[in-house]
Image (cartoon, rainbow, N blue to C red):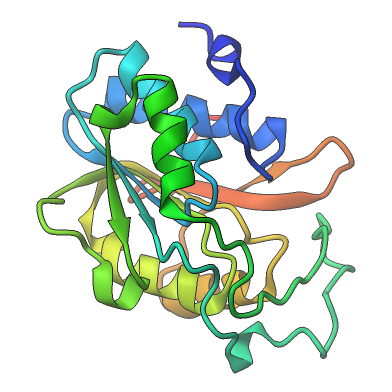
Length: 228
């Protein structure tokens, strides 16, 4: 399977081509190399990466599901942990692109936009849409094991709730991807808080300019030679 071919036609996404390709490669690895577990995405927006992950399932003729979870009302209200007034920590190495602070309603997209994108490519059967705020909707009924968890919640609440409610379902060796770890302060604080006593050995996905916005790791695999 050519991963580059799965990026065409282009999808409606704010995610860079570098991170789109990483998402496709991770999804394919989860399906090909792990015996069990569905794919889960928390933070769908207009469904761009949802379509990419569904393309992987379709291309591999997989019976696994992609659970696409979103409030479809935008971001939740910002919390104290999202506050970026104390500096963006741009001096870190490698540097972050920014320290954004999401606000209520940012990145709002109606559910029917995602549904139309999936139907247009015949991918709807591979996906279960899960509407609602994460504290009330996760984990969805019927989800038992996760081989890839893609978190794109931007805010502290969106990231922390996804980790708290879904990380226990990620199988050993399962891939966890957090898209906003280098761009939204709340997402980073959520990761640091959740893994305070057991931080995973996460790797950064760098953009061409040297910045990073996303990190990933495999659960329970501290010495990981994989790259995406």
